Length: 456
Image (cartoon, rainbow, N blue to C red; front, top):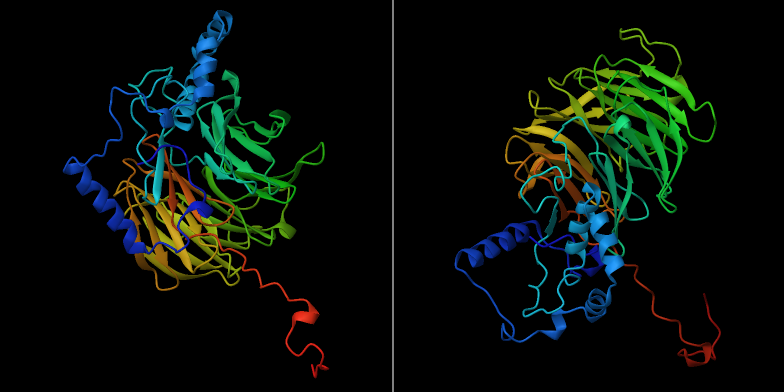
């Protein structure tokens, strides 16, 4: 697998890669590794100029003693250690003044990865990637920036230029980040913390704008935006709408879950909200019927529909982009099913047993396809054809369950994070569509028969 440097979809081959070619590429690479196939360029005792960064080498050689001491002090911080590891992956030549062999070419596979932990585990190096099914620690914003929460630290990766940034490190009393979610504009990021607080950050200035306190009594593991409304789901079973523009931000509250709320998704229209919980329930809520009162635990509650067909916790939720009333939900280890719901009449349209825990769901924006991620089986991602639910392909590579997935703004690339402390990128949904330009119209005097009158 290649390192962190993700190629944008525009850099991929112009023709889309077929599903079978994904497996063929992986098999050919495995065969070449088993037979020890390798290519060398140049003599190993002669520095390779193309493999060196002379600007970085000059800086390292001329760096003052004071600057080196300051850099060493910063590097001793646990959060900075991980940042250094990322920098080494992003800038592979920055620590090599002389390079005797060029780096291997980039992988031609459709999956690329970055490992969070390249050394034996220790408190300083381990980024504290929690293998917790109930958390939502990955999101890809509309400005092509990926956010990932690693313990008390939140990192940003820019998919346009490949740069990385450690945005914040939460204080000890606030606890680790349990969820992240980008606002629709892709500039503001919401963080749900283990200590029950919710933070709003301006990522352009790396500044904490406000902290929403008193909304929940315990960790906030799920978040979802609808315009200026930030909906939060907590371990206390509450679902709360927060209007981030006003001082008294709590405007609506939903009660219906008897366990932790681990999944939240607003529909594309922003009118309906789906919530999934540790109580094996899925609720469909309507913004117009929201109430600050506690809902009775009966079928006559303020929810529109209550789905109780899953046999385990429901974290994976996804609204269909081409059929507004269609919702997909996935159950945990004791359920293993993906179910499709008609949210107008509350009927279950289909159900398929995937054979393993369903951790996340993503609809393709281009084709009638659904991507699911799994745990405790092959730890794979599976692509399904809708509406037949025919399996197209299994994408394997993670060695632990695939906790979260997120799709790029152009709808092509999927990022997946796993309990094995790796973040991988998959070219699942093809290449971005390029706008075809119409040929320039010739001047009137160059057009054939330009001197004749036109009928139309």
